[in-house]
Image (cartoon, rainbow over all chains, first blue to last red; front, side, top):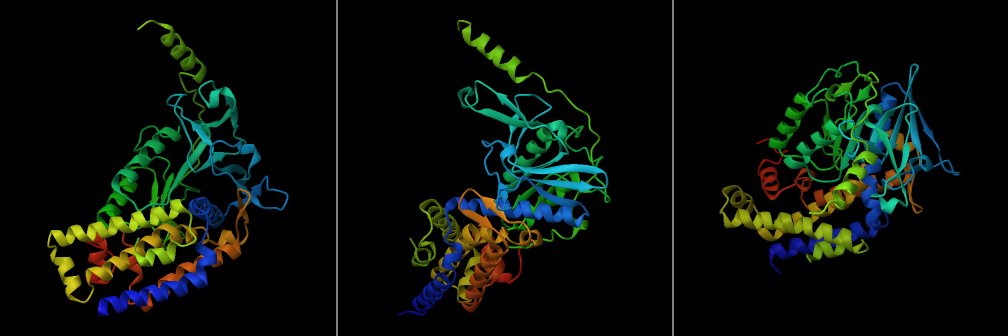
Length: 270
Length: 143
């Protein structure tokens, strides 16, 4: 056998030993592996708030005292756990998979993986004929109640992924006067600015792009979570924001108005 | 399927297995493209003893680390995981024990690779060009 062949056989034998030792750990379902990354980002965010001096209290736990993690936008958020965050006299909520209804237009709704909301934010249920045939309620919060929306991507970063986060930034945050509104950024800020958590590492060109995005917009892009090659504990390297002043914005047009308009148009002959 | 991937993906669900294979195939295709282009950096790496056959093995190891072990290890990297027990669906439970188990698997894999003289940061490269760059420099990509 050639030298190369010998080496490949060595690799095979070593990987067989690895699989024997650790297979019980990594032989998980596809769903578990997918959820693991998002849960890691969630725990990361909880740790951040603890480090910031918040009192962190999980709410609505199950009977065993476990945190019930919501991983799809279809569930009723009130049936799942969430985190109460208390800082001085202010309260906030950290939730997962809660749909946001944008202040730009009531028909712009989407579901970031995690969102920090003002305390006591209303999760509004609505029936919409164009959602699940009207048979299931659509739960959402107003973007006026959003402090920061965060997204998790268990991928290697690429430019289109990085820049697309700007869309979520603009649509989620009513406190943003314009995309590059950096008025809330402060070294003494208590919140993590809207953050894109990315699993893979980046090449130098993309690291430069990440730095440029962070210089321009009020956000973070954290890379390398798969490998632990980043310094989340070093808050000097993170963009922090102050709590935005609450300014309720009514999105227009409303879902009911738009649905009515579409039905009227559908009735008109072409 | 490469023999190394067959060993590592045994027991995984079909979708996850396909993702690992696809990831490895993408890296290997990148290497073949560099070879076709007569890339001088690749030629240097091959000349130093890392044949295309060996490089393809590294691609397989890298794909497995990034697709399977990385996300699992990410679930347990932080202090809070030792206090909060997270229930996902009816069967998945993430707590301090699972965090340690996933972390040990990740580190065990990197240790196994190191025994084969494959550096950890090579396995973290997201593209064939990055892999070759890191192998030439034996340090993180900084071009």
